Image (tube, rainbow, N blue to C red; front, side):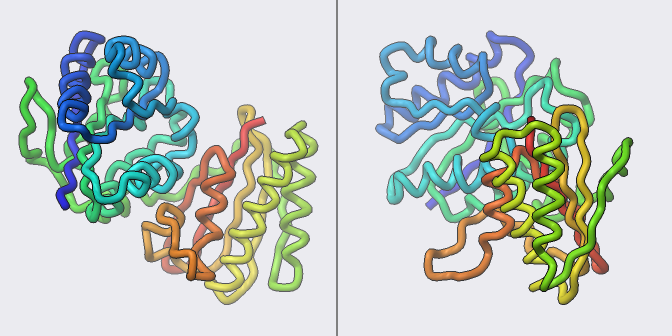
Length: 304
């Protein structure tokens, strides 16, 4: 099996189509399953330009499928390769676009780095477009660092700046900024996980979240707090607050995350472990993590 991960810089619609359409049509000509996971309006643009061939392509709006960037590997990329196991596939995936919330960008860059680890055992060719005019230079500096190859002038070329994926992830493992406003806080331990769930529920209901989203936040907080007790060997604290249309719950406790693929790869059905962070990634609109030898902080965001 051969895995390939290309970066692609474009500056306008013409350049976007000149890079993506030949990549997609070549895959279709070879009889390969093809996935397009890009944000609107690019999604409809590619669908329209493919014409009748669009019927043979899977389309996903990345604004929804990749709202939490930690969802993309398990439920977009690996889900597609596993669905077509034994066949080479082609994927256009655009996880970062102008207007992405700033707090989502570090997770997106980490995701792009970890694709090279998570997809190494697949027969997939992935093309990742980046808007060179619309994205901040601080984002664009990571494109060559996270992609072994670049699509340039219609040719795939080796990237000079490609770096070890885990080193890139570690580089972006930074302390999270303190909340600007007031927070509610409660401690928890092995016998008091209910206090963590109660705080999350109270904050979510006060913010007007739909009942099912209140449950999603409580489940996510419970899973992360349980991981803290089981893997950290002690209890921790939960803080909750409202910020810019999101309810945020932060779980803090002892223990360091040493496996950067945790929460991004679905464990075997036979494994009883490894599902807590994965569930939180599935349910929440954003999951932020900062881990160190002394502690781990996980922030769970749910939009109102």
